[in-house]
Image (cartoon, rainbow, N blue to C red; front, side, top):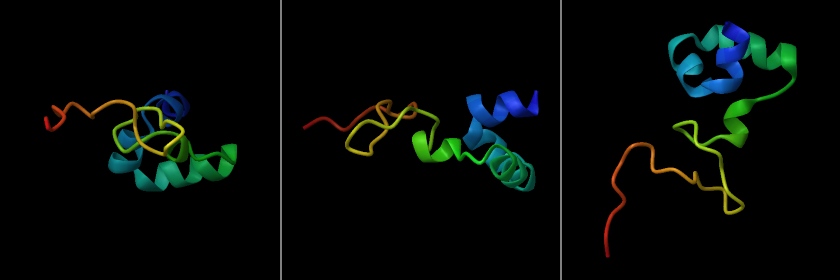
Length: 60
């Protein structure tokens, strides 16, 4: 289950259990937070999360 959380919800795992996240990052030689935005949304080509992390975007 922890390995699944590492890939599926890395932000939550890192927030709650940073030492476990660090160990899994070393074990898998990957850092899912690099490819995901701060709320777990995939990062687009501009380096921004495609989702709004549950926030309503500002209107112009």
